[in-house]
Image (cartoon, rainbow, N blue to C red):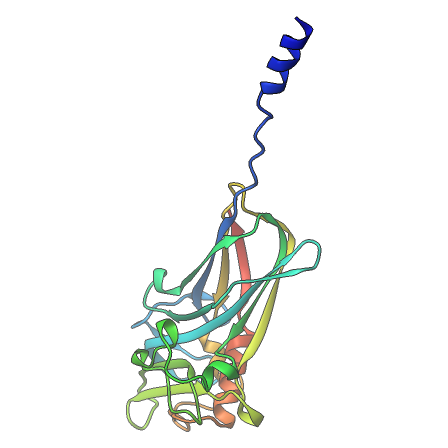
Length: 242
């Protein structure tokens, strides 16, 4: 009997341990205008407080790339092949989905505004980096990191076309931003949060003149650096929701 009991005991299955599931994070970039941060949409008439320009944006597009999440133990997890072309035409076109993030607590997100130098000189590419997106100058000047286009009665031509780019030397506009969460944020095991970022296109003119002076940028240069850096530096984390 003892032997039979031992046999049945040995046949009992061990409890199954299920590993915590990976999670998905979304980064949603929203748009506001001016010091009061009123919501901004394309085709909306706004006034730039510093220059006094009246502006109507018809196009705001920019690259976000090389996304990383900082674990609570200080180790960074990198999203592979993370290159995104965002577009202010809609919330969906301004949202990045980060799938398959390992289950863990995280404390910060890091991202690059623009496209790194390697991918500027890597030949024809696909997806967000495809030449078909109209965000590329040539193999010397590389990608247009941001486009801001629209209409303005202050411009000599009645319009503005500001194409910011440059990936090396004094005219490099590529910028790495880090947003601290201020707390630990669980990702995975049922937690799939959304990180809301605020962008304020009025900051393009924080260190640049009126569109009556400069309404066109079509190559790397000092104006492109000033405008891109002001815009990138003004982006901040607004909220984290589950």
